[in-house]
Each structure stands twice: as C-alpha cells, then as structure tokens.
Amino acid sequence: MKGSEVLLLQDWWWLVISTELTLLFDPYKIKKRLTQSDLGHLSRLLIGRDFVKSHFLRWMSEETVRQVESGKGADVIVRDVDTCSENGLVFVFWASSGSYVLKGGWIKEFAKRRGLAVGDEIGLYWDPITSKFHFSLLHKAN
Image (cartoon, rainbow, N blue to C red):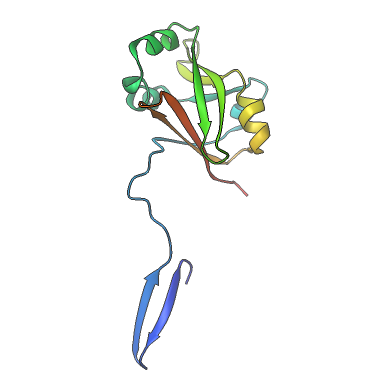
C-alpha cells in the first residue's frame, strides 16, 4: 500500500494508517506545468492573465501594479523556497499577448540553475507581507 502502513492487531483486526503528508493550506496559488516556450529562447515565464489578476495584482502595491501594467515592468524579488535563494526579476504585462511574464534572469537563475524541464510543475505565490514572489519546484516531470 503506497503511503500507508498496515498493522495487524490481534489475529483478525487490521488498521490502516496513512503516512502521507497532506497540507491543510497550500500557498501556491499558481501551479504551472512548464512548456518549451517557458524554457526557450524568449527567456521568460508566461503566467496567465486571470491568475495574475486574482492572485497577485490585488495584493501588490498600487505603484507596483502601475509599473507592471505600464509595460515597463516592476523589479521584483523571487524567493526560491527550495534552495533558500532570492533573485531579482522583472514582472511585466505584455499587451501583445495579453499575458504577464517574469523575465530578466528567469532562464539563468531558475530554469538552468534548477535544471527545469518541459512538464515540470512549479508553484508561485505573492507574499504581501514581504512583497516577494515565492517559487517552488513542486514535481519533476521524470
């Protein structure tokens, strides 16, 4: 039994106890399976518009939102919670695609350093207290 241990109680009672950890609160509001486009020559992580509006922009300062929406972008810190490292990226709205992106180091500081591949699942959330993105590699594809 995956994730469980079976204990024999007496000769006829069986008790199954789960050994899997289940989070009661999952902070990763954005979960994304990486595509070739996220890891390719465009050097950016594409994030869907609806997710950004509902999970990020509403928690950011007015000035940060203004910078992001202007097309110039806002300098943000992205904390890699798996490696306890932080990197500066640019969070910006691309009107041409109608999407938001993290760029300016995404490939070097995350994709290459972490060995990310197509199909890997990552998680992101914005922490309004520290004004930082938090990033985690949730599942490797292979």
